Length: 90
Image (cartoon, rainbow, N blue to C red):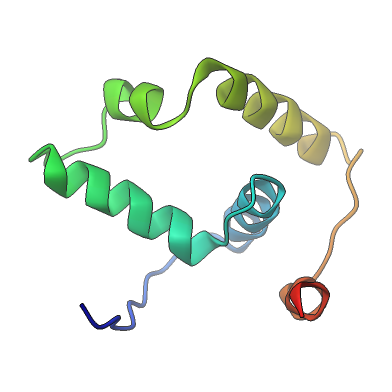
């Protein structure tokens, strides 16, 4: 199946936090969003509920996510631009 672009509006800080979070988990934001949407569609859900989130991330990942978000919110993690992040992947 061919990929098609999707444009969404999202808070800039939330996007940056999500990019860092998913990068640390070995995913880019596009892959993470695709995986979440695919899961919702497969389960025929019209809203994201706590059960989908719980199923999508195992307990270890949830704990790591909470710790990472805490570090980000407390300024204990460095910030990196998407350009720099993409340059590192090459």
